[in-house]
Image 1 (cartoon, rainbow, N blue to C red):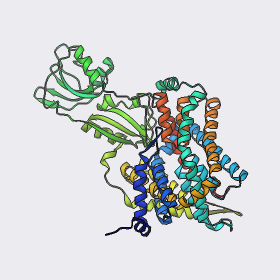
Image 2: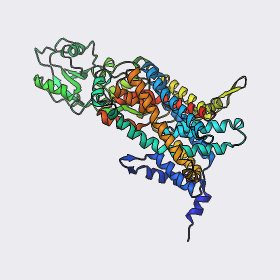
Image 3: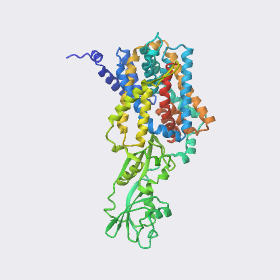
Length: 556
């Protein structure tokens, strides 16, 4: 039996898409000069090759993909978008606006100076800043406002120009940005390690917990004449400055309930304590007798991920919520907007933060009820709210406001983004509403973007080869300048006018460029996670701003 693979792919659009995605993921694992291409780059390049061989993508598949992607971007940004305003939000929003505005002005300048084809400027903006939401916003703006386009060019031609410019500038947007970010500290003689250390005492510098400080359960006997007799647990904690938690007390033959503020330790009590290894070592050095009590040792230590939704804890520092003293629970890490942040006693919590917490199982559940909810316990997805949210976002995007001869429309991308943000924000207040487990959201987001990118590559592939021989080198040079100059402008403003700590500033710039790979370069140079604080602050704003700027640039 003879199978013509080429013809088989030609006849089956779905097979082509999944073939491109599969090969793209394999290509994305390749390292070039120490730089990994990544899944999106791999899928785009594979799509371009297939497109050059004559394959094309289905526009409806691309529309479905970007609908899922943009809506999920809104869901991801929701809680932290509003919370970010309360924590240095003005600075991070300003940096994101500086990067986006500088890039837009450069794209407009190059477009007019070199008479680039309609749509190339928006594609250059998206590629140079490696911002897929920008490309999505621009393409959606073209399709949503096709009736207002110039007569001499069709919507499909503009979208091809968008895709070509994006494809030709995207790879330098990744690799060039990595190199430039790496050498900015060298050019300006910045010691990022020292800068990170400066900010560490106030903002967090590393893990609150380490292997020497993990919680364990031990049982101790209170002997006659002990200084602990007659005191409450709270009083003992204050006098010793050791913030442990008592899980249970055996008094005689009974195990009594424990209250930190009212339970008084008596002579002969056997006390079950959850505390760090270091604290147990202190107890041993003071010859506090440890005993074996099977029932009091029968507590399970678990690690859970808790999402902060309770407004009472938003804006509080880690030390203020006193988890070790009140609940025997310890924070291992904080994830904000998908980025792991440094955490110590002074780290400030924001709505939507995900805390990795370790402690006794029942107490972890108690903690989660106070702070928010345990992420892993959410196994279902509220498909009704998901589908209704997408529908409302698409409807909102069709609304047009007219001011005389000027018409303003959000477009599908803007509508989906706004509704996604609002749904996610409402869920942070009412956790039972609109349940979207992180794993489910990530799958939808990743699947949506690769569907979109594979179609972009397939439809642009034939024209990329033509562009490479004509306007391609010019687009690449312009794109390189659009990548580098906004970074330089934002750095100078942040350093000399905003007087920001330069480790935080470098992280914030990578967030404004929506480049996680560049953040990793900065954190490696700083030998600290401190730059991630800046990244998380600006990344949320950048995704929203660049989506609208991409749509705007198509019509300028």
